[in-house]
Picture 1 (cartoon, rainbow, N blue to C red):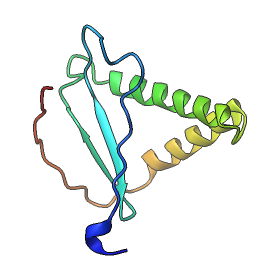
Picture 2 (picture 1 turned 60 degrees about the vertical axis):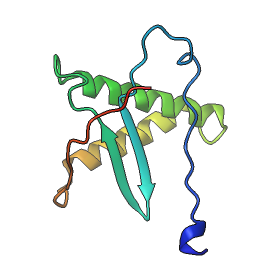
Picture 3 (picture 1 turned 30 degrees about the vertical axis):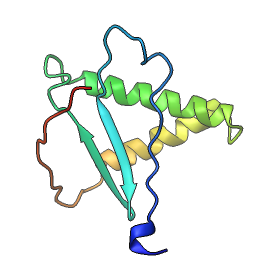
Picture 4 (picture 1 turned 120 degrees about the vertical axis):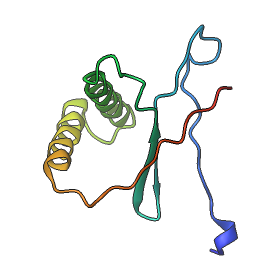
Length: 107
């Protein structure tokens, strides 16, 4: 594939966003050339940093539910696999990360 022929896939916003009185995008993640790239607003939960943990746990439950609905494996097995990978990932040593605060856009 030529460099200018690369394909980028963007997911659609979830049901319930359009027409909502208030909606805030809090996290985006991509895997590009084998590396994880994320963008988020670190001020989203500045009132209570532990809310990030709750967000990640809610995302894990949504992933396990989607995997089960897709027929890949039962919900409990999927949730266990995500949980084990999370526990391993947060305890491993990480290479130095690069990042910057880039701001946000209003639509």
